[in-house]
Amino acid sequence: MKYQYNLPCNIAQTLNIIGDKWTLLILCQIFKGNNTFNSLLENLEGISTNLLSKRLKSLEKDDLIKAVLYQAHPPRYRYELTESGMDLEDIIYSIILWGEKHLKKCYKEMVHSSCNHKIELHYYCPHCKKTIDKKELLVKDPE
Image (cartoon, rainbow, N blue to C red; front, side, top):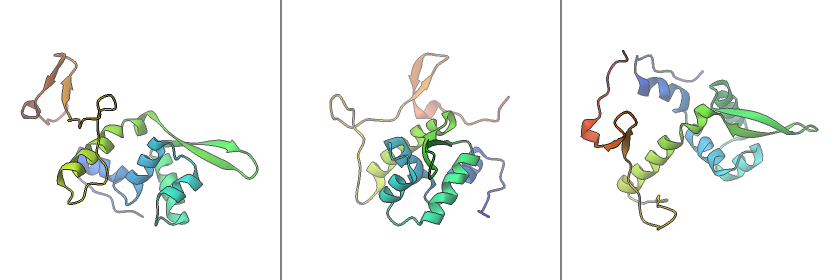
């Protein structure tokens, strides 16, 4: 059984779902379209078949992906992101941006596809209909 944080904290509880080794890398590959067991195995150098299978089952149980049968005999599945899984895209992009800024060796950079220049992360308030500064963010208990 995997380690679970027992803290009343969004970060801790989210890490209980996506914090295992390989989990975010598997999700990242599915975002890229590598969504079959074999394509995941090929693109995640070093992961064992048993661990990949275990992580996929866990991601399915946590409703981040769903397995869709694409071949009946033998049964083969394609993995699709659920709405909840798709919502992790911003986390993955944020990690890429953090890596650009802080890793000694940058492996990927994120750019605007139209102009090929680096992008920045911003926060938007749909109520005020404006972009807000990080200094204006407040993490609070729900009402």
